[in-house]
Length: 229
Ligand SMILES: Nc1nc2c(ncn2[C@@H]2O[C@H](COP(=O)(O)OP(=O)(O)OP(=O)(O)O)[C@@H](O)[C@H]2O)c(=O)[nH]1
Ligand SMILES: [Mg+2]
Ligand SMILES: [Zn+2]
Ligand SMILES: [Zn+2]
Image (cartoon, rainbow, N blue to C red; front, side):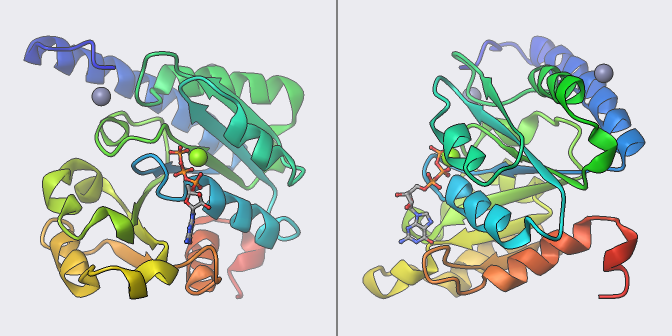
């Protein structure tokens, strides 16, 4: 929930958040961990995509997850079944993760594990198409997800996340035959604001497009054994 109605207050809030994000980034860089921040509306498919990702890459990459949810640990419990550390953060009334919450999570992670042994930290943000994009958490890249059931106009109506994204995942491609979505228009809407964004359309259900996502993900992880791939 937003606590800022005043522009000056909001600038201060974002400035304080940026200081925390810089702190987190120093940890990630010291540990040699790549951190990605996954963001979308509720239900676009973040947790399902993480499940597929953990299952596919668990023998290739050492991964951990920060799972942001307002109240429950339902998603965290789903992901723990893949045998990776999952740090659950409940945000209470807040509709996004901020850098201070993530700092709390990574400090807990550091107490229980040796972070230098890890390659990739995947952050699942709270389901919300607006606020998460404004609050850096120290991530190296932002991944926005948009399911095709949401409509091709959403990037124009909720621009910040789509302007900020390094990678846009269009999800639930298997549902295309049942909808009137114009995927070309959707892509053009995103490119009008963010011409260089990487766009990957996939279905976690059928597996279509998943390989492209996994390859992009691996390209973000700066570890020597992938340089020859
Ligand atoms: N048909 C279809 N359904 C999908 C796909 N990916 C996810 N879903 C369904 O969409 C619903 C929401 O998926 P989640 O992964 O829980 O979505 P989320 O973004 O993590 O949701 P929040 O954490 O609540 O924001 C579930 O019922 C999934 O089974 C897909 O590729 N195809
Ligand atoms: Mg989820
Ligand atoms: Zn610290
Ligand atoms: Zn908000």
